Image (cartoon, rainbow, N blue to C red):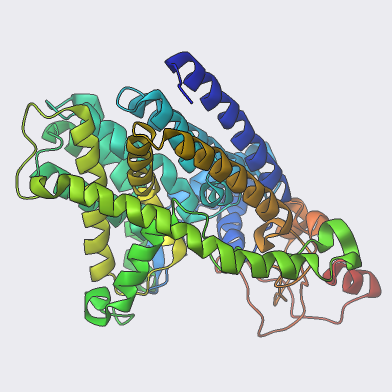
Length: 473
């Protein structure tokens, strides 16, 4: 396939429209469970009662995420549309902006074929599509990752005030959204040390200070309530390096981002919502097939990362020379981002999870894009073209299966998202949660409850109508 820039642009926009359609279907079907309800509670309290919660969701290491930026990100959309999916529209907009920034930045470096391949491996990626269409802290980070690459490349030769301002502001805002911002911060440090970008320090300081303003209410609340600070007894620094397995797990996730290998919790497929009781074998069969076939696709990004390392192994010990080409810069950006991920994975006090590397999702995709481009320029171009179209078709098909059968995007079936809650709240009716997929409310005193949502009366026996609702009837 010999692509001109015009034809490549046309294909990119077709893929963009297709990805947007898939995200819209997922968003319409998205469900709200534990972390989503915690975020919705913060936004609903702000939209409905004017109560600003100055800290974010509970963290895996204990305590609450610093800053109230998530209360704003969730609360403002709810002021416009009282529906649990309203804040997810903001996440989808973040993903759209992330892709437009990345495509606009990389098309000056990548060949037309590589640009198309990036649209397939990034924008049509089933993993990214999954993260684009439901409410969750890590899902915001794709935009901050895109800003990271854009602002670093823009300062490859000299400092630029506004790019440094945005770079620093993005890091501080990402810090308030999810702890995995450390991936971007470590990548910035390594890239600066190796000469890949030259920041404007005054502009960076101003951006950081401005982005830190939402931390002031959190700091004031911390003085009165020290329990919201992260506990220090959960895990230990350097756990990934000492136990090795958490580090290897993080590296595997890096490889999986550009493959079709989904998380086990994502790939539990059930089509009861669509087929009713007829889905006795289709969901289990698709789930079993996915667990056998999808892990095989990790071989491609593994080979791509080995290729990228071997191609650049002589450059590791030297700073980036001033006359380096943009393509050499991009190779180094991907490699040093991987090095940053390895360092953070090594130091992490907890075991890495599938979502904790998505801040560098764009960088994890680049090795396969660059290797695919090299193969496309070789004698294997006809075979590579068939592989690309087959991979794109498989990714789209998998995204459709996720949209129709994954737990995050269905109400019924195996391992559904809902579980009994201890109390009741007007939030569940006000945000159409009960209308789209009824929760078993007010069932058990020891049941789970969103951490900041006011508790209703003590559990009482359910009426027949509410019992049917709790069962999804």
